[in-house]
Amino acid sequence: MSNLKFQRRIAAKILKVGENRIWFDPNKREEIEKAVTRADIKKLIEKKIVKALPEKLKKTRERKKKKRGPGSKKGGKYSIIGKKRRWILTIRPLRKMLKELRDSGQIDRKTYRKLYLLVKGGMFRSRAHLKTYLEQHGLIKGEK
Image 1 (cartoon, rainbow, N blue to C red):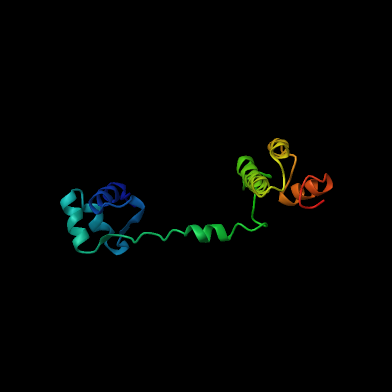
Image 2 (image 1 turned 90 degrees about the vertical axis):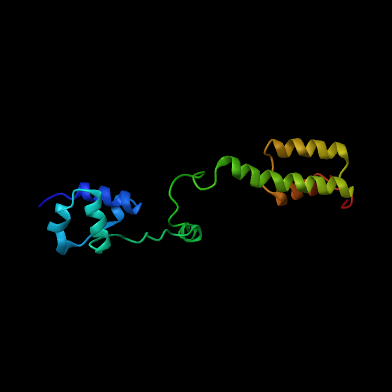
């Protein structure tokens, strides 16, 4: 049984596809083995003895995301969402909330600065956590 590596490589170059996409007619094996020039292989392509297979469909990005349920997630705590992304998702809403409170006059600039530094230090887990802290310490002006 002869190896058709050479013919496959030449056919791939002619058809401008990868070698894995080349299909040979299994019934015309001897004829393909005899083809040693580009012209010979071009004739075989015209006779439909050698042809390029269609591209395999790639899964869409949405389909890939769909299978990432809690049961199929592998790796540690930060393998899906990294530490930095998790920090960003926590810090931005907290800073936005502080700005809203300062601009509406519910907290003064001095309190804003102290809370901003506490937020930066990672003291609060969420907006709700920050709100309970403000209520417990009586820092909101409108709610005393």
